[in-house]
Length: 281
Length: 236
Image 1 (tube, each protein chain N blue to C red):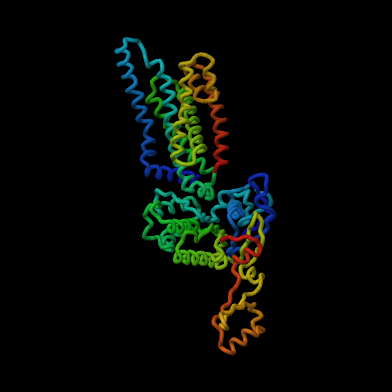
Image 2 (tube, rainbow over the protein chains, first blue to last red):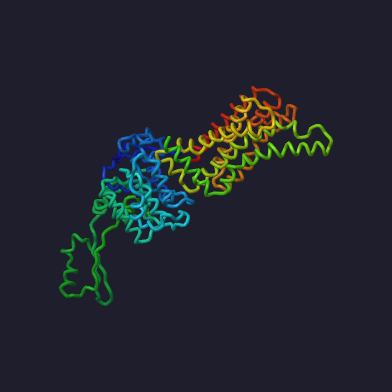
C-alpha cells in the first residue's frame, strides 16, 4: 500500500527528514511514534500529498505522491488531531458536505453517527460539541468515502477511557475490513495495543521499526520481583527466564514465606527510551 | 468542477449563518440606489443652495468607478472572510486533501466569487451609472473592479490570521480604491506617487480619457495578484 524509499525532506537548508525507507502492507496498522518535532506530522503530510517537494520516492496506493491527482484523495481518509469541521454547521451538514466532494457513494451518514454514539446530536451545531464529540466526529469524517487508507493523528487524544476504548475498537474493526491504517501517536499503550508494526522516529530518522512484541522481546525478557520478611522487608528481581535457578525463590516458596511476587515486562516506552535515549511522556 | 461547485454552494450556505456577510452581499444594490437617486438629488439641492452650475456632477465618473469596484470588493471581502474562518477552523487544510484540492479551493473561494461579481457588476453598472459610459468602458471598469476585488481579498487572507484581523486589513486595503480619486484632483506629476495602485490608472483612464491606462491597470493588477497568491500559498 505504501512504499517509501530514500525519502528526504527539508523546510530550510537543514535536512528535516533524511533517508527514510519503509513500506506498509495492505491491511496493516502502522504506527509512527516519536516526540514532538521528530518529523511524524511532516511524514504524514508527505504521505497524504500535502508536501510534494521531497527527494526520493513515496508511493501511496501505487501513486507517486508528488504526481498525485484529485482521484488520489478518493482512497485516503485523514483524521487530524484537531477539529476540521465547520463550527456553525451541524454535524450532519458537515458530513453531507464533505461526502459530496467525493465521487464514491461512501458509507451512510446515519450508520457512521451511530457507530460513534453521535446519532442524537447529529443536528446540533459543531460549536456546541465537546472536545471528545468533535474527535469522534472527525474520525467518522475520515470514513465517509470508505477509503482504503486511513491516516489517524492521535485518534484517542481528548477522549475519556470509555470513548477511547470505543475508538480503538473502531480502528481494529476498520483493519478487519482490510483497511490500511497509519497511526501517529505519542500514546505508547495505544500503539502497543493497535499497531502491527511501529516506527520510532527521532530527528527525522527511523531509529527502529518492528512489531511492538518483537521490539519488547528484543530488549530482554520480563523480570520477576518478589519480597519476603526477614528482619524487615527484602526484595529481589530476577529475569523470568532464569527463575528456576533462583535458589532464594525456591527456598521461600518451599517455606511459604513469600510476601509478594509479580512479573513486569518492559513497555514500548521503555524500549523507546532504550533505543532513542528520549522519552515521549 | 463538481467539487468546486459544491464548495462554492457550501460557502453560500455558510454565509447565511453570518448576518454581517449575508448583508454585505446586498450592499452593492443599496449603494447603487443611493448613487443613482440620492446623489443627483443632492446635486440639485446643493447647486440651488450655493447658486452654482455644478458641484458634484463633474465627479460622477468617479462615482461610477467606485460603483464598478464596489460589488467585486464586497463579494471578494465576503469570500475572504469565509476563507479566513476556514483557516481558523482548519477546514481549509482539510479541503486541500479532498478531491477539491488546493486549486479547486482557490477557484471556489476567489475565482467563482470574482466571476459572479463581474457578471453582477456588468448588470448593475448600466442600471446605476451616472455618466454615459459606453459598453467598452463598462466592461473595462468591471474587469478593473473585479481585479481590484481579487487583490483586496488576497490582501485580507494573506495579511490576517483571523476574522478580527481580517476586518482591520479590509479597512486598510480598501483604501487602495481611493487611488482612483487622485487623477481627478491632482494634475501635477506628484500624482504618480501612487502609480503602483491599479485604481490610480483606472481613475486616470476615465478622468483624462486615456484608454491605454486601463491596460496598465490590468497589467499592474496581474502583478499584484501573482505576488499575493504566491504569498498566500506559502502561508497555507
